[in-house]
Each structure stands twice: as structure tokens, then as C-alpha cells.
Length: 374
Image (tube, rainbow, N blue to C red; front, side, top):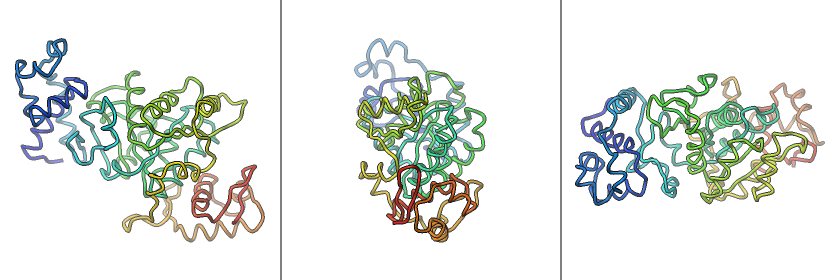
């Protein structure tokens, strides 16, 4: 990315302010008083003294030159972007937080930052059914125009991103490392797809390693950008419960998918439901509770292929898929295994298509995992 002198100067000033580590209220007051981030960064200690607590002022020094240089080097690369408080693409819902980060490092499609969004989180050691559920919910909602947000961890997070990338809503990863790191390394291919078709967002400077404290911290961003949080499989010690708690404190809706009473991966979700989370079985349950997401329902844009992408990347036509699946359903209730046999499609693909048809009112979900044409 080539930047002009003014852009580079402003970016350097914003990064310098981020390195100061001031609280959001203090930094906001400084910006009101001095007018620009450049003026704040250049201010003398005596000029800052009326607005900064003495204990904070005493530790303010010139930003670490190595960290500042690392940020500048990263931003100089093609496609690397800085999202700041004064950027029109800064997610507006984050201004409701008391500790909204002044700076984000971003790669991807900026327009998804302002889309209606749902966060999907859950266990890193998810069951096959949990992974199927995450992909299916994410694919159905993304195909309806909702951006899927998660943390790019293994398990439910990765499955949610995969499902989200199949639809026009796409998917956004909020990571707990610097933007130049992929953690865990096994998600390198997924990170590449997110950077190309969705987005990756980090409040941490380039070079920041996967420190344990960073991941709970980034959870407030995941829930803060979204209109709601869906938890799919979580133990009682899962970090997903932190995200759900933060969502509740931020005034977001919390949803949970129930599971077997014998599974440890259901206990976290069942606790959330007992504490007031909405029990959901279909994507429609979520849309019914969140009018803002229902407003996102829209046909694919002209530049986006009609229909969902198959898991191996093959583009398919949504109308053809719907007709073929409806024909395979016939007139009697049918379970997913039978549909796999009849159509030759994977269970993940069929689950996503069935949820889309359910959103359109063309099929109904029945007890026992069966489906029927309406």
C-alpha cells in the first residue's frame, strides 16, 4: 500500500497514541482539546498535564521506536490498512464500549465492518455435530446477508468462519495476536481466505505474539461488533462463556444451542440458557429475535455468484440447488442421512441449504432431525 505523506504522518500519530496505552475517555478528551492525533502526539508533557492523570503522565515517553517501526513496515504492504476512531469504517457499535480501541490493524473488505453481524463462538475441541451446526448456522445467516464474526480459533470458530465465507455476508475474524501472525498455525489457509473474501481485525500491534491475556481481551471486540452472540458447544470453563458474559454486559442478545445432557460440551450452553440466553434450534430463531439482522436479508450482489460455494470452492446455482433438494425431499418427512444418499451432497452443504429453504418458508424442520416440504 502506497500512502502519501499526510496519511503516513496521521497513521504514525495514531499508532503512537495507541502505544501510550491511555484509557479511551482520556484519549477522547485529548483529541477534543487538541483537535488531531498529530497534535496530541506532538504535545509536550506540560501541555498534556491538565488532561492526563499525574500517575499516567509520569510514565508517558516517546513510543518504542521498534514497535512503531514494525507497525509502519506492516502498513506499507499492499492491502494492509489502519482503522481508527476518525475512520468512517470504524465499527460504530464499538463506540458504546468504555475501552473502544483507538486503532485497529485490518486486512480484507472494509464494507463488512459496518454490516449487521452475529458472533458465533464455542469449543476448540468441538464434536463433529457441533462443527456441522456451526457451519450450517453461519452459512444460512451469511447467505441471508449477515456477517459472521468469530476469533479464528480451532473448532467452532473455524467452522463458523468457513460457513460464513460461503455467503454474501462473509466473515470477520477478530484475532488475539498482531496482524502479522496466524494463530494457530493450522488456520493459515483459513486466514488467507478471510483476508481475500472477508476480513481480519486486530487491536494488537504487528509482532504481538499469542499471549494468553490477549484472547479474553479480544472477546469484547467480537461481542461488541455483533448484534448478538451464538454459543455452539462450550464446557463450563470455556472462554466462549466470557464472550457471552461480555455480550450481556454490552446489551447484546445471547443465544445457545442445546445438546445432550450427558455431554460436557453442552454444559456451558445449558448454563447460559438457565441464565437467560435464548435457546435456538434454527437460524430463523435468531432472526426472529434480532430485527437488525432481519433487515440484512437481501439477494446476493451482482458481483457475487448466486448461491453458496461448496466446501471445496465450487460455485453452485441456488435455484438449481433448491429445486433438486426439494425434489429429493419428496412429500414425506426425511432425515439428513437419507438426503445425503439421495443427492450425493455432503451433510454440511445440505444442512446449510435446508436452513436457507426454512428461512424462505419452503421447508419445515421436524423433531428428530427430519425435514419436510411445506
